[in-house]
Structures are given as C-alpha cells and as structure tokens.
Amino acid sequence: MSLPRFTKSLTVKKSPTNKAPVYHGAVIEQNLIPSLKRGELLVKIGAAAFNHRDLWIRKGQYPRIAFGSVLGADGAGIVVAAHEPNDPMLNQRVFLTPSRGWEKHPEAPESTFGILGGIHFPSIGTFTEYVVVERDQVIASPKHLSDVEISAWPLGGVTAWRAAVVNGLVGPGQNVLITGIGGGVALIALQICIAKGASVYVTSGNEEKIRKAVALGAKGGVNYKHENWPSKLSALLGEGKELDVVIDSGGDDIMMQTGKILKQGGRVVCYGMTAGTANGEAKISFTMREVLKNQRLIGSTMGSHQDLIDATNFLAEHRIVPIISQVLEGLEAAEQGFEMMKRGDQFGKIVIKISSGAPTMAKL
Image (tube, rainbow, N blue to C red; front, side, top):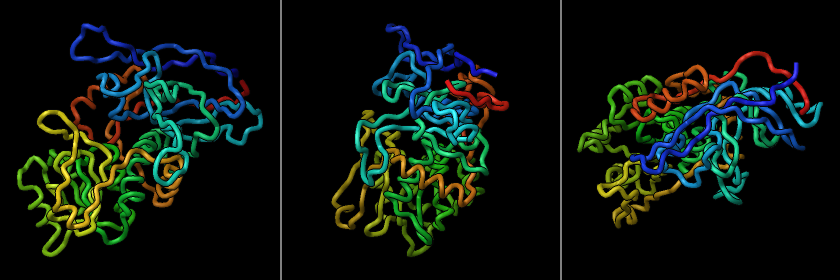
C-alpha cells in the first residue's frame, strides 16, 4: 500500500482586519506531503495536544505568527517512512520534540529558538495527519504510554522538568509550592516533584482542582482568591516549616506573597506570567526583603532537547502518566478544544486523537 500524497491539517488563517477582538481562524486544509530529504522521517500522527500558545496565536497574542501554517506543538505517532529504506526508526512509536534551537547547553538556547506550530520557525506543526520531521528531532515513546498519553507530554514535560529539577533543584524531603494547579505544566511538575520525594502544595482559584491535586498526591492546597492564602498555606506547612521552592506560572506579586514562608536561600522559579497587574503589564516585584533573605527569582522557559530526553527517561522510570482532561475525536473537533481552553476549566491536557490503524512503511 502506498502512502498518501496529501495530509489533512489544521492551519491558522488571518481574521478580517476590522474584526475586534482579534481571533484568527483555525481551518482544516489539504496539504501536500513533501518528498523526504536525507535525515528526514514521515510520522503518522496518532494524537496531538493543545497548549495555551495555540489559543494565544488565534488571539494574535503571540510573536511571528505564520498564517497558513499548521498549528500544534505536541504530537505523537509512528514512523511510516524514511529517506533511507532500512532506517531502524521505521515502524517505531515516537513523539516530536516541540522546539528547535536548544540542543544541550545547560543555561540557554545555542541559536534562534522556536516552538512548533503556527509560526515561521519551525515551519511544521502537529495538528495534522502526517508530518515530515528531522530524524534527530523525534524521541522514542515510552512503552507504558499510548499516543494519546505521550502527546500530552513534550512541551509541558520539558517546561516542568527544567523549572522543577534543573532550576528548582527539587529533591527528597523538600517543601514545594506549585501555583495554578490544573494546567498541563503545573500538573506534570506536581507528578515530577512527588516522584522526586518532595512534599507538594498547590494553589488554585478552583476548590475542585485542589481536591483533585490532593488525590494525585499533593499534601494540600489553598485558594489564591482568598486574600490571606499565604497564611493558610503556612498553617498547612506546620509550625516552623517553610517552603524550599515555588514553581510559579502567574508572576505579579508571587515574591511578596510567598516571601515570608519561603526559606532563606529559597528559590522561586517562574515559567509564565499570566497574572499580570492592574494595568496589564506582566512583571514581578522583588524587594530588599528578598535580597536580605538571599531568595532567588529564576526565569525558566521551556528547556533543551537534552532536558526533554532526561525528563522522558525519568517519566519512563517512574511510569508517570500525564493527566488528560479531554480526548477529542479528529481534527474536526478542534474548535471544542479551543473553547475549553477559553473557559479554563480543564484539569490536565486536551488531546485530539487524529489517526489509527497499522502503519505502512515506505521510502518517499
């Protein structure tokens, strides 16, 4: 059986210039599958997962949007063709690395950094039936996970790993706070920190999400909508106990709120700034109090290819299963996923199951 020449893909289309607020379209199109070059594979995507950046792209709130490009940074499937006919990767289950430009440098990207889906670089996305990808930009899927499960891992997994392990230095016996539980990165960070032997506490504006986090192994949680939430967290920690690490996605006043219950030399790792301020400016206040306590504020964005390999090995060793909120059937259901993300009531990742069936191996 020969491979198809075309693939069905979900692409971003520019909204009318007079439409407010901006909300670009997400349209299913038929795209030609390019011929494979040396070092390239063809992956049949079994599942792809949403990230908040997909929604930000449609809202026009993301840089370097490439209209007509395929959306999606996270995807998993099976290698069905390779440039080399005897490539050992043929018929192997893999997931795509979600970024380019950062291979293994311990501090920051070595070159121009970009995340898959909806932008000019890299030029591919995962919301598609088939994708041509560089051979060295896929990683073998852990055997204990299905395509749906591993598709919920790459971007969130590398972000959580670098925030918690590389920058946060989370280890056994530490007290860790993860803010905004319910999102993909926060939940993976929770799973990683628990597997590392830490005592994990969470915040959320939703009591049900806190209960679900506790069921997953968190020691407790507080509602950040309550003005005195740091005092409530201090009570949960117990007399004389402090936080070692804060893994944060909100920014804003996180240092002010946690400074009194963060130990001297403690670390706040910020991988996002969704809270903003009254005037809409994203920033974090850092005062002399934090300086005198030797507390550290660390910015953390994504991670390297090597970080993702290390994180995936840890995932496989501890048989961690990413938390999935909803599985949608087919690219035609993608709009439901965007609406779920707008509401923000998901607990875990939203995944699209794209294709199934036995692979066909061939050379293009």
